[in-house]
Length: 302
Image (cartoon, rainbow, N blue to C red; front, side, top):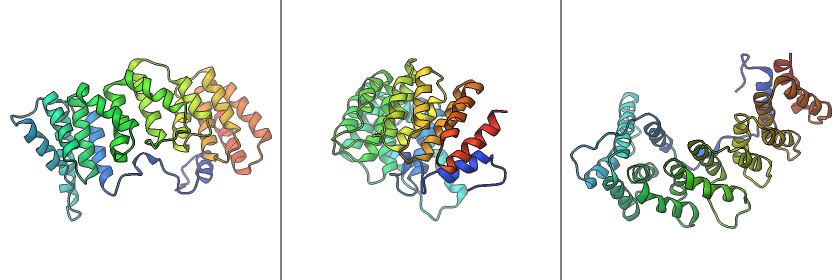
């Protein structure tokens, strides 16, 4: 939704954004499951793993499943908040509960499973963090073997990057450089995001891979969008060339071009970025995108 307080180029960007566009990361989740997944993200980022209480591994996992069981729609917001906080605490605690609990979480997932996506993701998360060495082979199997539920496979990409970053880079790099796959995989955006996280963990420069994804028209739009955004955080000559190519791309993806312009402004010296934008503006045929460029230059090239 546009407001009077937004910069002119931001309003123009909204006009050029494809109708119905949304980031696809959570698009495969049913209603309500996003809240559960958010609790895992908070647990992964904020909660400090603690020693598990005096329960057996089986009891710990039963406790986890109970905690992640979806709440009734009739619950009030205060009860919902308390439930949400409890899921954060339970997942955060069991992530550091040790290999025995991790193995039990994996056993439960593989042998019993659940019809509730949030419970399965919770089990996989606890297994990966509590017993990374024991869970890593299963994560790799989920990612690259067809037949498993897509929510398990997508989450496996994210988790492998967190618990085994070096291995994730080794697997994700060749996969992303060959977008015309003959098998079904999780969306490429998961691999790009996972690659970035893994590369950051091991101190690897991701620019070469990001430039490849950015300029490869066979990649899914969401993967390219994320790669273009991320290039703005990694100033380099390779990145500049990739963004410049994308800025004049004629595939009809106006949102991708918007992101390229924004990343160029973010990553290049002002004079260089403004010169590139002016050159493109002088040859631009799309009136909306031309106005977007004019707005960006008016704000950044004074």
